[in-house]
Image 1: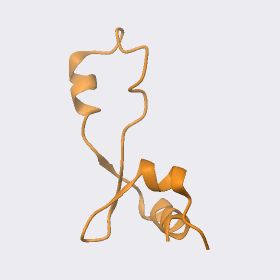
Image 2: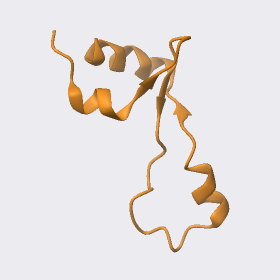
Image 3: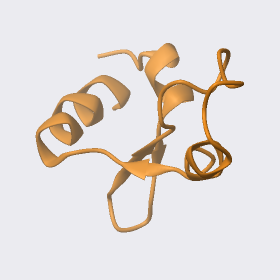
Length: 60
């Protein structure tokens, strides 16, 4: 099966096998969000175990 490039670009796989994603809502309408929310959204977030299986299938 071919790699889904659009998905491969959006996720990172760690050495331990976790899949990380960026939090939603970073592109626009940020003026109304608090600084705390904006700072928190800079970090990568782990994906749930259920979604991990689906994403790995599409990446590999």
